[in-house]
Image (cartoon, rainbow, N blue to C red; front, top):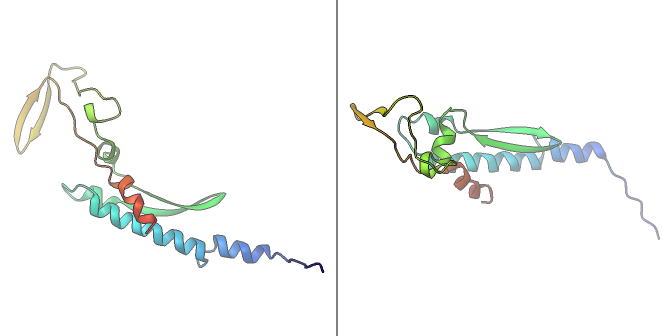
Length: 131
């Protein structure tokens, strides 16, 4: 005895890509979980980095959630700089003899600095997507 299977493409598409469908709803829930965890883990100085963490729903053949920052220094905070960053070398001046910067209102001069360790708040927050 043979069975006949009828596939309703419109119904499948609505389940997979409709904003009210279960797949998109689950992606949005997971994206919000990641953003919330990242905001808890993000280092805070002025609060700009933390408040800028956001998610968006994207479609490139398949739907996915993109979580990230648009603040220009977010990559340096996340990955680290100097000996702790991708180059693995101290930060040295390019055109001057010393680096000049302020720390707590006090001007400091240094021939080089080690940099800062990365704080991978986004990468660490990905575990929230599995929750």
